[in-house]
Image 1 (tube, one colour):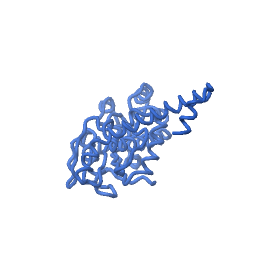
Image 2: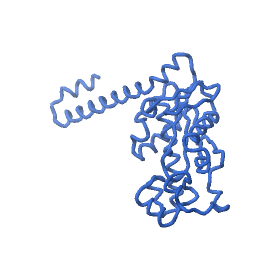
Image 3: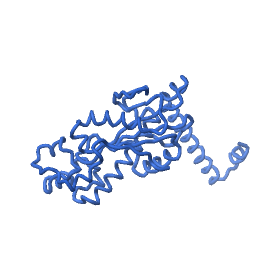
Image 4: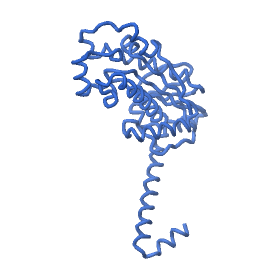
Length: 260
């Protein structure tokens, strides 16, 4: 502080500009820390009741025409305040990748469930999401006492589950799960783009972009397209060939813990 006071007395324009820049950075950092504290309000409520482990749960990929659904559960340490952590939809792809690595470094436990296209078509997307969220909680290395879930009612005994509307923007734990789920799914779609370059999966991630719809009309659907979704549902399609079944995630879905 003495150094700052001394610099404040320095009349040189360059020094004053540096001080102003420093003050802006500090104000921005203070505002970010305040935002993060607000996003911990649900977690702090349960920590105050003696809860040790709280999981955040979110998904990515409910809306696309193609590709699996990914669901993540993340348990952060009580003191975790990851700068920049927010709803994955509010962040750039580069920022999500950076936060993904930071979450892996800090998390107590992480699990991800890859829900296959066949599961989505069989169960419908709502039920597949609900079941997948229950499964991902049961695969955590540490069993949480409480799970904060983004806008989905889920029952997983003996865990207390709390559905929070817009939870990915209101809970730090859910925001962390949203980033893990989103980055995991984006990486899957980028790999599928190498197998099916005509569908532009690396850019649309399975959503119905113009280029994707043009490829569907010209080439038909791949085994990664959801038969229960329009316009794929109304297309005349051949059954999935046996050799293509290997591209599906296992019918029951599966969970794994990313390597730190």
